[in-house]
Length: 173
Image (cartoon, rainbow, N blue to C red; front, side, top):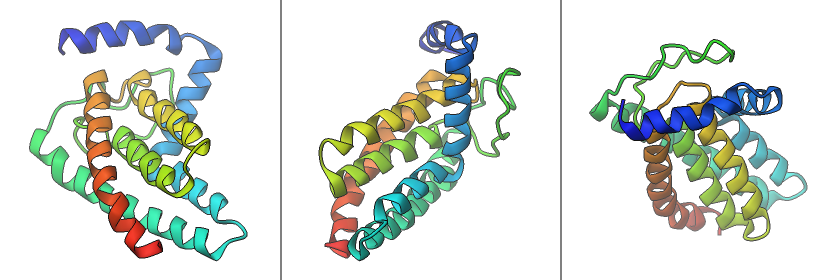
């Protein structure tokens, strides 16, 4: 592990020992699996509008594409080992089947926040970013990822999200 990852792990340890943050980050890690939180947000956002439903469907399709690119493409290039096989013993999280770098949760969270922001603008963008940061950081808190994996995932998601926005916008207007 790099000195950055060791220092980050030390900084995150108090979050693992606090009941409230332990629950928050454990739940965030779980709802980030398969981008469930982002699909649910998209569907809730769609209530009452055919146009917003089209946007939600476009978000789900785009998230599927992002997942394929990250999990079946980029992660195979790096094949980095995770800090633990199945996470810190204080958390009940799914054991991942892919390599550690970049974090898929961080990538999809950043990607979703960018796409959702393109749909909603401010002030909802602040909510999307806050949820994305919690989901991304959760993966280092539960020790499924190194902190540098999170940074790599955020950068990856930002690049893919920036590329996706004009494509998604062309389909949903």
